[in-house]
Structures are given as structure tokens and as C-alpha cells.
Image 1 (cartoon, helix red, strand yellow):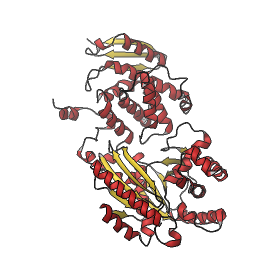
Image 2 (image 1 turned 90 degrees about the horizontal axis):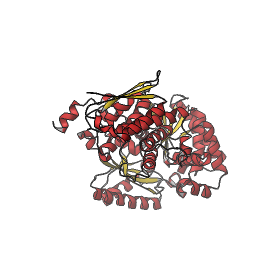
Image 3 (image 1 turned 120 degrees about the vertical axis):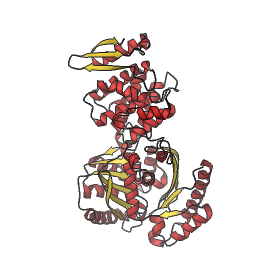
Image 4 (image 1 turned 90 degrees about the vertical axis):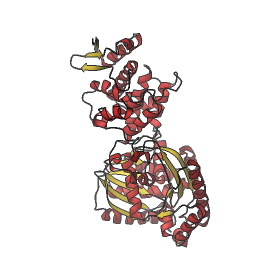
Length: 515
């Protein structure tokens, strides 16, 4: 039977058939975008599973195009030269990668400057790249769509801060609603006369107007998009001694933000930026952004705050996706792509998921997707040295560019994969990260890892199920039923791994062989 016929006949279960090989997704397999902002100019090239792509290339130049714009009405002359040089370089890189033409957008500085059109013409003449200038509301929409790339079906308030502007957008049921824009970018705020007191009063006044324009809603989830927000989050991590330095999906409370804003105000910025690995040009804007964030929290009173590394550039990619692709789970699609590219037997992850899921009869949809992700990733690190394979799998899970994962979920996924390769996970350099999980979550990760460790011994094909597990929690009995074809695979090592699984479950184990 042809591979396509096999694929058509497979029951893909609740997660649906993979889409990364479909024509619509293949067209997005490598996409390059340029974002010309008021503070930075960046090229991002997305690659891989279109629903949750990796960053094939990511380069940023801090040009400060918007510096001094409020006084002069012109783009910063030095920044303009640097921006043109950067775009020229990006165009050459795109040609070398075979991804021309690039999609390029410009935001507040270029749209407000009197010489913005002249700069666009110069860029077109020098590089062949057409800069599309978008207004504040469109910027807000694209940033909100970037959030949707990481969190399908999200709801709440998106706040995107750039150098010269700050945008807000509502999200409800995965759709972008009301949008507003303002001049609360830190490049503009630092040009206000009268010091910190005058800046704070100005921000508070503008924020009250924005709150009114957005319909006076409070108590929503707040997603923070933009480099200045990420820098503040990095400082918050440093202040708290937070063990995982992945910014995407990092959570902060109102109290933590207040403490961090005060910490920034009292710190030596040069010393702090060195500890937090923040550029000098970015760090100089952080105190102004901290004032904005405190007033944002005061006006909108969000119920929780999440940092999004996805913004306008990811929103541009999301814009090109067909609806069916948009609705897919980015975590599962990314893990499927990794399995198809790196596993020894692509497709076995689906079989393994069906094998282990009886151990988690009460798992909700959120937990099921973590189990599914683990099964898809269970074999993608096989090339690593055996002595370090467990550590590599944990590092990959916790630090990889995976969308739709809370930090605790990253750690649980990593710990499950670690248990897939070793029986010893305690007293390691990862112990501070394990502390992010409850005892129940640690036990679940152990059970999942040991079940995958057993299932990995029972490979037949990517289409054939080797057997089934039946778990009776009330009686504490685990039954393994193996197919006739899988019977020869149940040797000493498989027997030992089944025993380890029963121990993790505090169960008695029975093995049945089908005739």
C-alpha cells in the first residue's frame, strides 16, 4: 500500500492528521519578514512546522530610528544610515537563502516622520524591498495575531510596546477585537521635560484615556509583547532568582512587577544590564517602560500577566496561514515535525501515545497534549551520547522554541523525557527546575517516562500496535497484553522496564500474550 494510502486510513485520534506536509503548510515552510521599528530593525526567517516554526535566522540591529523624532519631525539620521545598511544586508541574506522577496513592514517612526516616504523610496531603490507602513491599529492587530500563533483561542488584553508607540488590542475566542494606539513608547517618553514626575503624570493621563477607549474592562489576562517588556521580565527573573530563563510564557504578578520596577529604579543600570544580558540601548529605555507598565497594571488590573515572545513578526506569518492550520495546537504540530525529521521510526509516537494513555484516565485535554508531545519527542534525541541523552532531552524540552507551553508544563515534559532515558533524575543540576512541579506532577512525569521507556522496547512498525496496557487503580493492578508479533520483543530488558513501571505505580503487574 502506498504511503499516502496508509496515511489516509490511519485513525489520527483527537489531535487530527499532521498538516506540515500539506501544500498550504509547505508554502510557509520558510518565510522571511523584516520589521522596521522605532528602536530596532530585525530580520526573522521562520522554518519548519508552519504552525509552530523554529527561528531559522534571527538578527536584530538597534538603530533608534525614532530617537529625537518628537523634536525634529525627522528620522534619526544616524539610525537611518544604520537601518538602510541592515536592510541591505538582510536582502542579501534572503537571496542567499532563496527566500526572496521578503515581507517588510515599518511602524511608528517611519509612518510619523516627515522623511519616512523618502526613506521607503531609498530602501526600495537600494535593496528592492518594499516597506509597507502600517498604522497603529494594524500594528496592534498583527501583534495580537502573533500571540494567537502561540496560544490559539486566547482571550485577554495584548499590550505591544515599541520605541515610539504602545498598542492595545482585545482578544476574545481567538479573534482580535477593539484596538487602540498611543505615543507611550519609551523613546518619546524620555524626551518629555520635567523628569520622572512629569513623565509619570503624562503616562497616567494617557493610560486613563486608553482604558476608557478600550471599554473600561479590567481583570483580563494581559499579554506583554515587545523588547522593553521582555527586558523587564529578564530583570524580574534575575531579582527573583528564577531557574528557567525562557521568556515566552513567563508569568508575573502585580506585586512582582511593582517590586521589579522599584528594583530597576534603584539599580545601577550598567551593572544590571550586564547581569541580565540586556543591550545598552535597550537598558536605557527600561526605566521609562517600567513606568508605563506600572500605570498599565494600575488602570487595567489584569488577573495575570504573561510575556509573549511572539509579536508583529509572528503575526505576519499567522496572517498567511489557512484557517485549518491556525486552529491546530502549535505544541503538537511542532513535536510532530520534530518526530518526522529526527526520530528513528517516524509515526511511532502516535502508537506510543495510544499505548500509555490508559495510565492517565482522568487527564484533561491540557494534560493529554503534554503526554502526546512527550510521545512524539521520545526518540528525537537518539543521536546524543548515551551518557548525556537524558540531560539533552530535558534541555531540549525546557529551552526549545515550543509554543503553547507554560513553564511548569515545559519542566514536566522535560522530566517525562528524562525518565524515558534514565531511572535517576534526582540530585542533578535540574533540581531547582523540578521544584516548579508538585509532588503529584513529578510522579506523573515519572510514570509517563517509564511507560515510554517500556514502549520503546516494543517497536514493530509505525502502523502496528505492539500491545495494550490496562490500569486498574482501585485494585493496583497493571496488565500488559502483547500481540503475537510483539511477543519476541519482551526480553529481559523489557521485563525490567515493566517492573520499573509497576513500581512507579505502586502496582502489581501481569503480562498476557495473545495467541
